[in-house]
Length: 199
Image 1 (cartoon, rainbow, N blue to C red):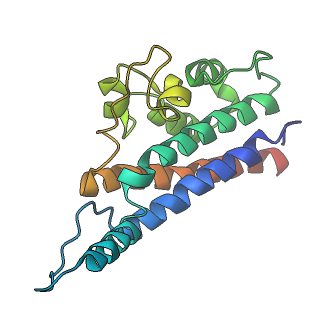
Image 2 (cartoon, one colour; image 1 turned 30 degrees about the vertical axis):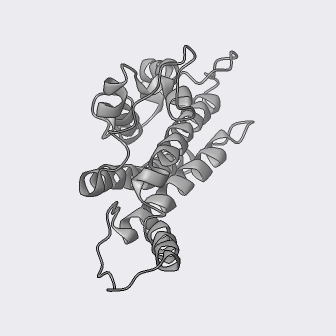
Image 3 (cartoon, rainbow, N blue to C red; image 1 turned 180 degrees about the vertical axis):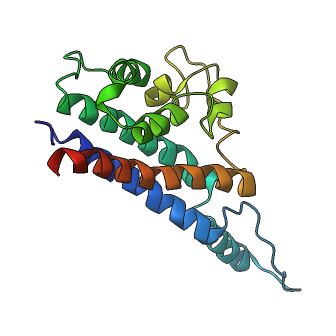
């Protein structure tokens, strides 16, 4: 059961980059601070090398990749929902990024989908999201992901606050691991939904 447009295939790609980035974040421990012994005699070249080493060792932490990971995840959710709706001939003709409107159409027609799909979508589009504190801190909902995870400010020039996403080490990693696991669950949920239709 595939729609005319490959929304679900594209969704997998955005969810995949989010998932694999979080795998790298987990390997590096999501550390912001790194401690090591400093030699007695340091020069400016040592400082340069230290900075290069620090950048390398923290390249996958949430300070550097947290916001883009969440953007990819929510864009993947948008494509996922558009794919679901297209397979049922329910996709609105008006193009937009409004996750709430897409989810509302899915909810009204939830008998066409599985409980597994509904639970995963509702989790990340509601206050149950592991990053709900970021959205609420900015007086937003995931509907605005396309702006608040893509730009540093809104259309009026108000700066978004990213402290609930960036620099949170263990707690941040815990939240990102929920996103990673749900990327895999979303992929499995589609397979489980399609199987009975082809049995």
